[in-house]
Image (cartoon, rainbow, N blue to C red; front, side, top):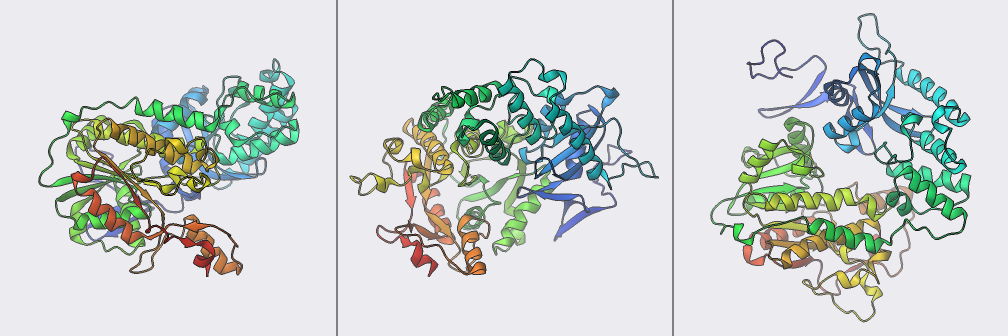
Length: 550
């Protein structure tokens, strides 16, 4: 924190209860004692949530907590708030929370008239979860009775759907749910979608698809889709996934303007902006770039609130995969706290302009992988983030853009019997209808982002695309990613005993250190721009899944 009495003193102060990690001479704030929770795979500092809500100046008091609800049977990040002057600012405060916090840290808001205090006058955190559950149970009883005025003018379908929304979005006041309400802007998640689909099938006897919810997030549209399903009509509000994918490519690529004359002839030292350094492949590529001639400062964009948090995440991840963090490494890397799902990468204007001027080349590895969710739930993470980084590469001087994609971008091309080999620079558009409409949401979003970069390359944009196969552990030390699909599959198989029998399934397996070396060799020469590269084993050298299990 800044000095509380003299803002001119630049020394940062720490409070009793702060957790500090030391990295040689670096002192990194690691949160507050016992106020960190883990939710949906993310570690969340509850004090940070509280601090950002207080900064909005709409509340007198706030307590953030992780709450397990008996109503929804799920875990929720909830903020119990006392509004300023007793005036409710639900919509405004929720908008402020989205602006100030990463998506995974935006809480559900519950209004209290006052919060309990302990003998020293501080908020009593102990017992807040029980107090919250009592409040939610009383509200849920009113929802089930549908006896509040906001239910009065609704049709029967709308009334029942509103009850479902209120049951699943436990913190949202019923009066905040109207015909124009957006399920996701009110706090709906992929888990909430699954719950909603189950309840809709049980109550209305209509089996909706996941995409129908994502394409119809508004309350009145969902009610219409349900009524059409009950009447046996084809839903007029749902587009085919391939139409949506084509529209997304055009929408985002048409927004990007650049002048090829803005691309300077690069000589000497190059400064790099790298995303994905807190993932699996990113640390290995970072190590290779550090050894490459002509590479200067490497700035890693890390999703974090502060620079200290960003640096800690970066250094922890390097050590996790066995990379040494020497003084030389520390002097060449810099962690930039931001969020590339946001315009200007989540940075202030001055910081963004400075980063634009300091960057000579961009490497984009950051990606979201979820084999269970549709394309629409990947657009924010995989398509919009790529768009923001492409915009960054076009701002100021034009910067070469290295996009790390996946062979999932063209799906199971073997379904097209006439195709033998797929050439690297061949357009992927012909695989959209016959193949990609059957691909999972991750692969579909990869096609959109891949095609967006490809179209820009055809217009003269200095970029290269690298489509990776299945990247597994390092060939030198065996270190792999325990949290990806294959890591979890094999660890569970080893723990439980049985292995899946996967007939006719082959994987294009590559060791992560080999992939990083190949990426470095190709990307450090501008003569290789303007092309796509398949980073896979030689033709015919893929591995059968049963062989891999053995």
